[in-house]
Image (cartoon, rainbow, N blue to C red; front, side, top):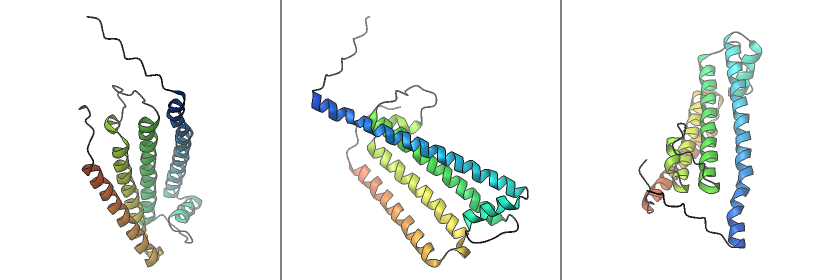
Length: 198
């Protein structure tokens, strides 16, 4: 039995075609985010190398770590608190990197062009049903995760942080939580497009 011929794409008039093609102006933005991802990878490895060197007794690496987690203080040895703050900083970098991937891959797939990853063994599970609404909820959730890490770092390092900063960061985190809940609630109220089960 012969397959039905694939439908031919509709030819657009010049103005609609120009407007539709303008979506490719977003491509440099996504390429820029990929470069930002490279910077985060470099930063991650610099901090990890400093942590390993400090654990082996390198005082210069130790001071570099302390300057990052508690600016203005000095340290003579690597403490559990410093290790915890550095590791939380590394987790923070990973979470921001995950956020970048969601924006790059999900944004490109949603707003620029299909990637045709169906059936690819490495296709992210969430990409099979991504749309602008799903992307907003996922981004809001990722931002809450990043904010939680920052807040935990602040609480661990509370001796070196003013009460004003603690209150401000807690308030901002609560605002992120409420915003994410509002986005998720709005998403549930809107009619959902029917899509195939994957």
